[in-house]
Image (cartoon, rainbow, N blue to C red; front, side, top):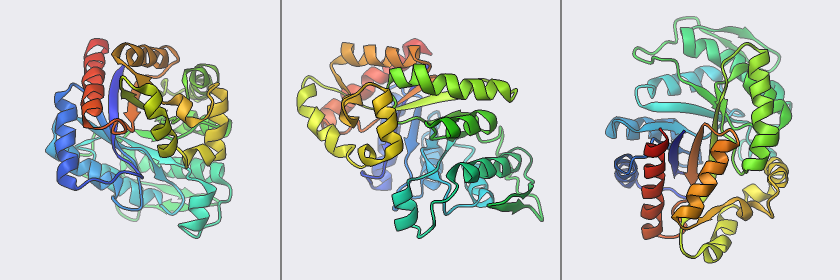
Length: 307
């Protein structure tokens, strides 16, 4: 199992030079990957490509791009352009609130849109061509859309946690990016569902990239309140509320992995045993710089030790 960290997120925007510096530090610490969340500031595929170009050896990816307001042809172009550096393309349905308030788009038939988006996107990434005519979108290529050097094809991961999204992801995507899904939810609900869907579709076992808020600290109780503040928006989203409940946690902050090296390493092992193929820590900045470095050092050691 490999381990990584989230560098860019909705709530924390850093100057580009600082992001590159931190990416080098992550690579040198032995971490496998760095991920960038899509916000209304940086464009995450562009940021991932720039960082990947500057920091060879570090896999980079996006987690995740809302499908509302985007088109498969444009997303394919972004992803293929970054493929020399990127480790994965994350797609998300987005929330009703953001879709309707920020984009001014009706949040209608999200699962249908996800299915059509993935159906159109995959052939573009694999062959550079598409001829898809669905109910919700059309994607055709009057001339080839392949980007030279964008091989192997960009892996597509979906921020799926509900039953319908997991089924579509298993059938059409390369894996999933669950967030705030603890080991119990992964083992009992998420991993079995997406794996069964992939198997039924004759596809390989999907990647399970678990996004986990976590910090190595000697003051876990003190950081729990900060974690609750950082996760307050997600805690209000119905899909997250459901997976938090399935995880058996008392709120979103209850899923933050906070403790000393031994405690955090034990939690990482729990995620691996629950079926995660990769664990990516988010919000590692919550305890300050010393705690962040301590966290990255541990994750790098665990990644090297576990392959």
